[in-house]
Length: 378
Image (cartoon, rainbow, N blue to C red; front, side):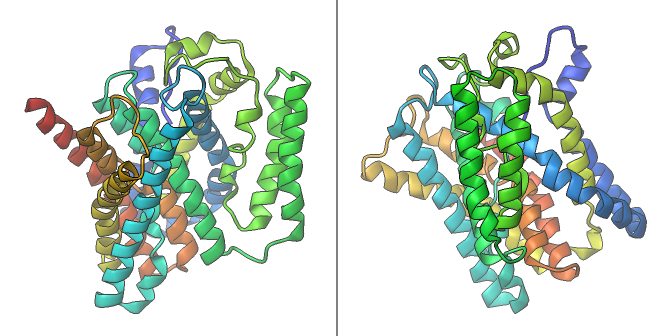
């Protein structure tokens, strides 16, 4: 997620933070390191993964959830419940089509062991997709919050798939109790008008993390069910607006406090997960790329078209050409695709090949920019 920062920050620093370039730096470092000395890279990456993937990324997803929640407030581009149905339907299509393409290719051309990774191209990377959308669309354009809601719905549903088809272990009955307790505690804190965000983080946030961890879901989404209960403004001032930094409500103070640390977390995430030797490109790489680059746009457009026939409206100002660009931008599967690959396969050729496919999905960035430039020129 990218955020605005105080005007006192130096311009180069703001440019780096606002465009997730620390994540890019971590990713490139990991790739280079893994291709120079894979043994030492794996030793360091293994030590980092729990702290980064399971704990640090909690705050990344929390800030993403904050932006989407505010977009549903009065004045926000997703304020109408009918308009929210459109990105949710698009997310379903954006998962089903990639999974079908991947599974079909793996079943036909194999090896058969790769079929197990059918969920890997279902994911959308929120950070890079949002960065591409912000680079293409002007401030206030509905495509940005539309893509964010689509991506979070995509990843949330994908993590349910992860729990069902790739369980990390037996589900503890305690998990079924802890999550409702976490939500109840968040409601109680809001009713008491708790202004500090720390009680929300250390109380219901910790309970939610424990519930997801023992419930088979990835705990990085721990703050997503808590964020909507933090005291917030009465209306949306605009996505990624600098005015957010001056708002006194709990939710915006939470974002302001964590915005820069999250960029450092993203750097470490790229470092811990993106290191794959180029020699390990194989069939799994091609299947993941086909699922993402073809399946995402086709699924999003196809389900949106079906939704239109049944009366589901797209946000005002979002044209079909914009939705096509959104579909291409959503083809970047890096973050959660790496989660899925790690869950689907043990260390070996299948894991390396599919991780490389998730990494190479960055080719969607120039494709989306080129599509936007082509339509603009016309």
